[in-house]
Length: 333
Image (cartoon, rainbow, N blue to C red; front, side, top):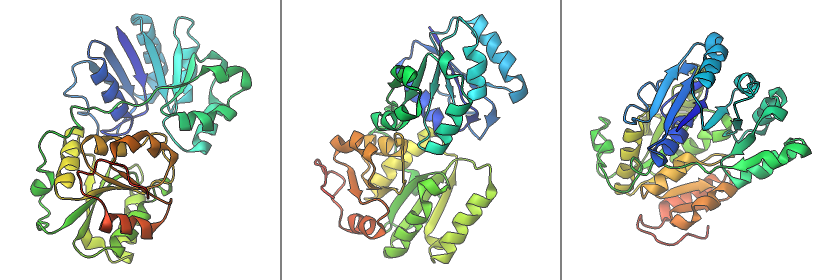
């Protein structure tokens, strides 16, 4: 059995995590993953024998994908974040195309919906019921029955409680044993509210150190703004930046922060699923998070400590007063 997945950007996180989770869950299925741009993810699937990565030029993508669709009898064909490609493939009568939304940005979703040949799609898929409720009103009423939820899967082998936890010790930053690590994973955009994370660090004592993990950025000015914000708040020396970590390194990072009595901090203003929270809690790391409906998915872990969205003071309070790593019951923040 073969499945085809198309997404523009090949990175180590984001959609690559989606594909890894699916490939791990279906080891007997061959996944053909096609990308247009290498964003530092060329080795993101090097440990997965059932994922075949193809990186092609955008000008050749239409003919190439059409060739693949004729060469193989795909069980499923999924397209993400690229309406033009979905329109090319959905024009083939023998191909059932699913269009997936993993962005939580409604303007982005509306723009893509406006460019899609919706009547030719077999399904529109989102990763959570929360996103389904947001997208349903945007679809023509006659097509709403095609909206489906396919929860994202965590690579439980990579992001499990067992395994190496030496990341911080081997990082080279030389932080002492008395420091408490705060981990933030995301992108430097407004929706992720990275400035809130920096303000949390600024409000905490010196022993709290921020660790920021991001994928490669197209726009270098985003990183410049991040560093300028950190400098303006006086926390530049207490922030460590990591670019494009492998899934294996990130899994070790979660466990390392967990063992150092640290936290994952989520400041996102909106999420369609929240992969970092899913991975971190699966590795046993507690989370201090600005509240979002999607965090209901992880309430059963007892590790997600929620505060009113955007409340820096409450995030600081939870981190300073928070329950131990072994807490077995959800908090009532």
